[in-house]
Length: 572
Image (cartoon, rainbow, N blue to C red; front, side):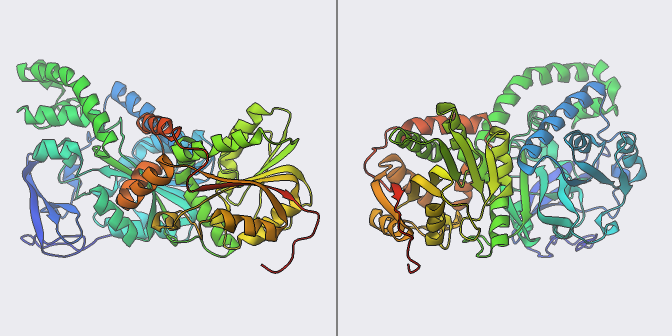
């Protein structure tokens, strides 16, 4: 897969062909051959690239390249295993995975232990030998050797895309190879991270000329979009690459031979440790370990780590959820991967759950259905407070049901399209619907099905206030007023016995103004994806602020209804 190849003195972008590039770093030395290169940045597509790009890279990949010693390998393998477990937690317990540039096969091995079927690709027979010894099937070549059929549930390009001559073409092929609902996980060095900005041309992760391209988050998102892939979530933390990258980059800036510590760890220049320069460097490196970890963690919190990791899938409509049932299920299967931690830890969902639990004290019930149970946190809270109550949960998304099953293995959980599916009459004493109706095009049909299933009570929560762009991106068709919700519930056959609003001032005023004013990517970066300890700490602090909300005024609308005995009319 060969992209646009510039002539010897042509500085045009090898990705898009435009000629408006500028030098980002001059005199960047390859620490293995001593040759100098430039890193240029294209003003049109935003991608950085190494110039000149050698016609062949074979001599720049010696046998010892990244062949670390036993202790280093054990540390890296442990960290890779940990990362794979994080992926599996969100992507599911099994499937068929392909890793492009699988190296020693550590990630594929970890996936196999989690129940996945795996296959790898490497650039040469020599590179594939290590992975094959672990029993993982690895073939030599590129994606052109695979049938262009959607076969894979997961494709991994971990610190690989920057090495490829045609990254856009590769991602386009990846999109064709993914099954519907499949994911691609990729990570690249972050050209706009703190480490790159501080170290400049001494930055360890430039690794010219093996890194043909250099991405920022923005340029990575752009090339993914061009390939037809939609970003689900992003993270910047990397224990594998970030702290060590600070140590090596700072040693380079202090004047030690370029990447000498790395060469020693790879066995390229192990005798250097016995020289005065080598001994001094080892001592200096030891002193830099703690500051490097602190710098790394601070950069992660700021969204400016040395590496950017993205989980993406085939692009779907970004506005409202699709109207057809299969389209809606696929839409929410995709988005629940990014929503899971947000629903568990973000202050707004926690506030809504506390409000629901407060209202349950008014009601008597022996069975409950959480219609739109999501990842199951509300049902778990009900199970803990009411251990004798029969629990059930329904969801359109199979992904969300899988998450819920992890929390509540004994609950009755089932897939339900509340608008289109037939339901069992008078099945549950209490039906709860929290932040669901706004996602349904035909909310009246859903309410009528709730009426049919309900024996005693229905408890409904919906957003009020203006339907803005943020709500539309979350799949909302509408927001409600108190009168509007009462009217819909009465048309469906319920008599509303309690209705109120809440959420002011923290949620209804401060939060909503914040998400309207912040750039979309900033909101998604904070809210979506996996929540590490830093995000959870921030969310816990925000949750304390949410406890200042007043329980009788705001934009969140709550209603409790009881089913009447009359069959609801057919007209809206």
